Every structure is written in structure tokens, then in C-alpha cells.
Length: 351
Image 1 (cartoon, rainbow, N blue to C red):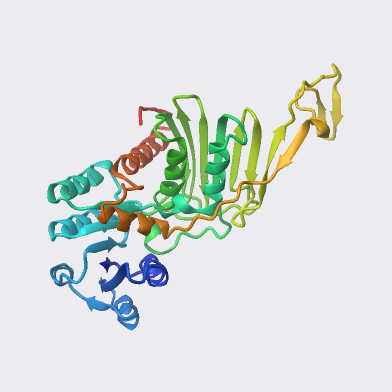
Image 2 (cartoon, rainbow, N blue to C red):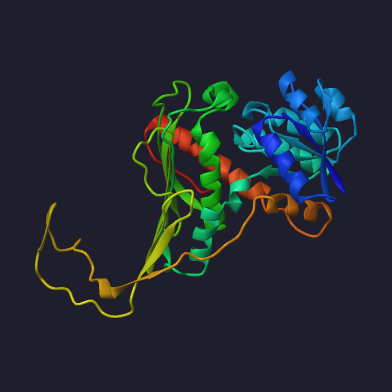
């Protein structure tokens, strides 16, 4: 059985702890925690963990095989490298680093010491994402030419340390890292050739609480990624357009549908259709008999599959799902997005 120690026993760390207790009895056990906040240490102690007020004492304890780093973003590189240099495998919460250079230093440390190093990109296992990926993999909408991923909130709030730039706060680091990772995972090895970003600080002065990214892939496929903390009229979570159909997922409950064209020739009447918004011919509604609706594919993922993969890798039975290559690509795209917003221009790239 593997044992895990936690650096930063905050909200996400307690989520990890509870899930591991529930799903990995006899395979993985959380044994210890270090935090600079006495209140968080008290919670960890009440949860049955051995607690440490000092990082060096924690790392010298040898009470675990794996260290999970779940601190604010700006502390990730220091604690990951320290854990690896003390002989531990390391898992880091996302975003793993604020810059590609920081990430590379973490990877180099893991390679030097021969340790596992992975990033907790748990939203690879979100049900809404898995539905879209499965639909595309099955060819249910044909070849996709545009995918839209949106996360809309209504409260206009960025919580805690995430509202501060020095801590690596903001929504691109918080949600964008997931949305980009999902799109990259969906598109496989196909390169991103341009990045355009528009970012705003609507209600959070130091960091972005709104962004829109447009990623163009080498095939011409376009991904539009958007997050807003203050959108009172919300749009669907996903749209996907293909040459054989369209997909929509409305929100967190994963309601949605796929609409496809039936296999027969359309006969267009050369007349203008009058609508409430004005006349049109090109955009006139398609006859109902030329369309079919099919259900979204059924999937049943769970984010604990991430830890199943970690255990299998340590046992020599599997390869890392969240690996160095795709994590680095996500960080490269995020750096290009910040540069695009700063220069108010698109960034040509090969990522």
C-alpha cells in the first residue's frame, strides 16, 4: 500500500483525503499533513492525520511515499522540488506552475532523482467533457470544425488567494488550465498554430475574472474557450459543430442533444423567408424532416481514476495519463494567452 502526505491542507486537499479514504482502502492512505495555518492543521489532526508545523520536519518524517502539493499556485515549484529532492514521488495541484520555465525545473528534478511527477488535472474525468469527447471519437457529429467550451458564473466572486496576482490567481489559472487541458486532450497531438485572448478584470482588480480564448489547430479546427464569474444570462457549457451534426450540453447537469442531418439531398426554394427579425434565405430554418435528434453518448467517469492511474504507474502496470508533454503544452498556451491579451494581438505558435 502506498502512503501520501499533503502539503497545504485546504479545501482541495480535504477533497483528495476524503476521496482516497472512500475509494482506495488498502491501496492508498493519507497519513500526514503540513500547513502554515493552525486551523487547517487542527482539521487535519481531527481527520486522523499526523500534522507538522514545519515543512522540513514533514519531509524528513518518511511517513509517506507520495507528496501532494495543494498550496497556492506560487508555492508549487518550491514544494514539489523539495519533496522530490527528499526522495518522494510528487503530485501537484493545477496549475502546476505559473511559467513554463518553473515547470521545466520541476520536471528536471523528477528526472534527476528518478521520481514520478504528475499534475492533478482532474477535469479530464468530468462527465460533460467525457460526453463531448466520446461523441467526437465515435464520429457522431462527423469531423468537428469548431468547439466552444464555456464556464459561466453569476456571483462575480474570485475566492481567497485566487484574487491576488502574486499567488498566481485569476480565472485563466483557475479554470482556463482545465478547459485548455480538455481541448488538448480531445485533439491529441495536433498542434495549436495560433492563440488569441481577450481578458478582463470586471470585479476583481488584480486578476482576470473573464477571458475568451480562440485556439486554431493545424487542421483549421477552432476552439473557443470562455470563462466569466459575472454572467447573469448564461450560455451552454459546450457547443460542438461538425460536418455531420451539432452537439450541445446545456450546463452542469449534462442535459443536451445531438442534431444530425438526414442522408438526403436538400432542395432549396429560391425565395426569401420573412422572419420576426427580418428577411433571410441562407439562414432560413431547415425543414424538420431533414433533421434527426439522437441522445448524447452514455459515460460514467470518476476523477478518482486519476489516482488509479498513479498507483498503476508506481506498480509498473501503466503509463502516466497526465504527463509532461500535455501539461507543458497547456502552460505554453496559457503563456501565449497572457501575451496575446497584453499585446492585443494573436500569437502565432507551434504548440
